[in-house]
Image 1 (cartoon, helix red, strand yellow):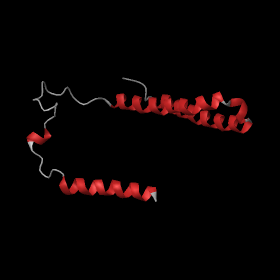
Image 2 (cartoon, helix red, strand yellow; image 1 turned 135 degrees about the vertical axis):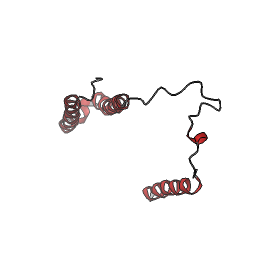
Image 3 (cartoon, one colour; image 1 turned 30 degrees about the horizontal axis):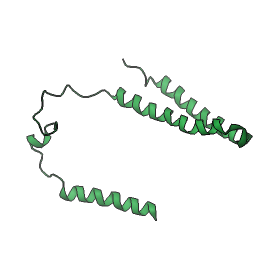
Length: 109
């Protein structure tokens, strides 16, 4: 029920944006916008993908701490099943880290 409502809202927003969104591309509409004031200077260029890639990787590996901290606090009460589950989780993350390093995603050259 909730998923259907969420999908309906998303579809409705997309339909409304197509219906009421801008139709013509003019030079004024394509110009960068700085708080209602004329632009102070020309844009410097496109940001490199490395910045976004590092941000996504940071979020991915930072979420690990969200799951790791509560597990570590209640480690003794959880038992061996939780230990093996966390070991599997950490092994998947470690495999992801190895993949990222081997692909050279963290190199800035």
